[in-house]
Image (cartoon, rainbow over all chains, first blue to last red):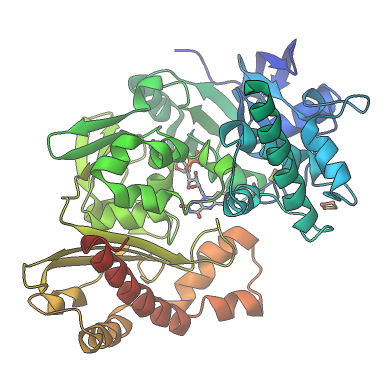
Amino acid sequence: MAEAGVRKKISVTVNGVKYEREVNVRTLLSDFLRRELGLTGTHVGCEQGVCGACTILIDGQAIRSCLTLAVQADGRSVTTIEGIGSPEQLHPIQQAFWENHGLQCGFCTPGFVISAYAFLSENPNPTDEEIREALSGNLCRCTGYQGIIKSVKAVAEKMQATAVSNTK
Amino acid sequence: MKPAPFEYLAVNSVSEAVTALQRYGPNSRIIAGGQSLMQEMNLRQTRPAFLVDINGIKELDYIRETANGLAIGALTRHRTVERSELVQKICPLLQEAVKHIAHFQIRNRGTIGGSLSHNAPGAEYGVVTRLLDAEIVAVGPDGERIIPAEKFFIGHFKTDLKPAEMVTEVRFPALSKETGYAFLEVTRRHGHIPIVSTAATLRLNPDDTVKEAHIALGNVSSKGVPYKVKAVSRLYGQKLTQDVLADLAKAIEAEVDPDPHADSEAVFVKQFSGITSRRVSELSSATYRKQVSSALSCRALNIAFQRIKGGI
Ligand SMILES: Cc1cc2nc3c(=O)[nH]c(=O)nc-3n(C[C@H](O)[C@H](O)[C@H](O)COP(=O)(O)OP(=O)(O)OC[C@H]3O[C@@H](n4cnc5c(N)ncnc54)[C@H](O)[C@@H]3O)c2cc1C
Ligand code: FES
Ligand code: FES
């Protein structure tokens, strides 16, 4: 059995790029992404799992990066908001947030977009109730949520329409 | 905030984990899903000197059918239980309960072993474990032992686990087809630790009188353990009429014992780090929780009854 230590080498794929770094074991994954890799799209609100701003995908599953250690991402594949879309080419979820007033200050938005992404890839045809349940783990101080729910509904409907026209 | 410094070791087997816990002593802690531990460490409420990461013990992530129910590995995520067809078939109450735990992002990481070992007041898994008299399998330096739920939970955030012991499996009995069940809770916000949680099972005689009924409640015991209601025994042989339920409600209010002092030290302070604001204390007052206990218990029995009758 290996010895416990305070630093560890990790190899992690973020948005398709492989990074090898030595990290302090107490570094949170959120801080690793922001400080070590400069991917500041992942926001940090509460650092206690409550606000959802730091939500990312790890091997395709949405999790809180503030409740995960960077060492725990060793050998895994991480997707952050930067891997979902770019200013030149917004992801349909981002486009829908823009069109439906799904954001104001934008602090919570990366977390909402990632959560919606994970949710819609598992449940592409959700009910309103399911959308609300899925977004209940993300807090927004600005919008009052209606625009966010509308955005997610709009993408789901668009995706359904495309899926139907593709099968025609 | 960020966690205080610690040393970290990832292990790949139960024996490695136990050896590590022994080697690093009382200042070492297991990290499973990290959904409670990292929260506490970020808030500097806990400062373990060593973390033993058990996420690599893949053989502890399973749900199996057994001769009389289900065996669930300690590292099984809440999300896996939520979606398991086996759980739906054999112990649907557990599935109903797990949907109330946090949000899907938390359920993707949090584990059943972690939830039980943490023993937060009101935690859904603890209530169901106690209701069904589930068994907790623990492995330590002296080998394996099986702990009945009644003995496992011993106080607020305390369990019967010895320092170098870890949970490896939880065993739930199957619910028979004739058993009605329900899980209900009251929370400040959906997905947060409940103010009161309730689980119930019910079986009827052919004439609709009660053959067997059980109710367990979370966050209403001054001892800080999931609480199994004694007053339900008065239902046996009776029909669930309004009068009978009203009588039960009174008895439950008299029986449960939410200790206001223990509460102020427990879940709310844990979550909000020293803030005992008026709003929190009002919502969680002992009187309020007594009332919620009886209301939720009666409602749960009604739902269980309707389930038996095919109404749900
Ligand atoms: C925003 C938020 C909301 C939440 N809401 C709820 C809720 O509504 N209901 C609820 O029940 N929980 C809730 N939780 C907590 C969540 O369910 C946790 O997943 C769970 O309590 C702990 O499981 P874990 O695997 O994450 O354990 P960890 O956080 O890794 O560990 C918790 C404790 O258990 C010990 N431990 C872990 N695994 C073992 C083992 N196999 N053997 C021995 N000791 C072990 C650790 O050393 C630690 O002391 C919430 C968490 C967050 C962040
Ligand atoms: S910063 Fe991670 S949930 Fe708030
Ligand atoms: S847009 Fe400002 S917090 Fe959500």
